[in-house]
Length: 100
Image 1 (cartoon, rainbow, N blue to C red):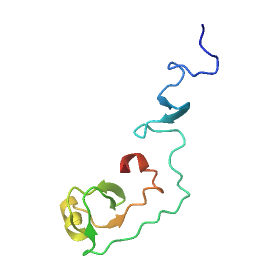
Image 2 (cartoon, rainbow, N blue to C red):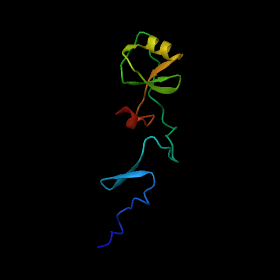
Image 3 (cartoon, rainbow, N blue to C red):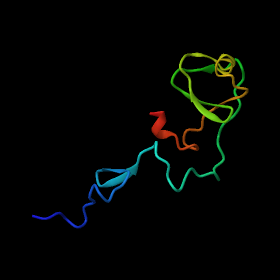
Image 4 (cartoon, one colour):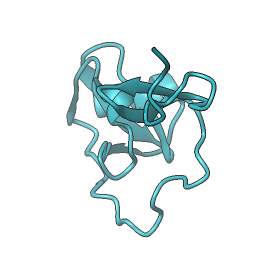
């Protein structure tokens, strides 16, 4: 018996993986589309006494960063030598694969 003409082959899928007939690109590979820059991010500056939780994503000087310990926002900024800290809009930045 031959292969069905509708089944994708591993050779034609490139850098995607097939899961239940659907293909998805690895979250660590760049895509030609890129993130939707027209979205307004729902992020706001955090006060210095705000609690930062281990494992959560925050935005330090415009770059997402994961907290490696429970501390205050002021201490997190000091450790990372940052000037600003914001909550991270995971959906707006398309970071769901990294947030899990």
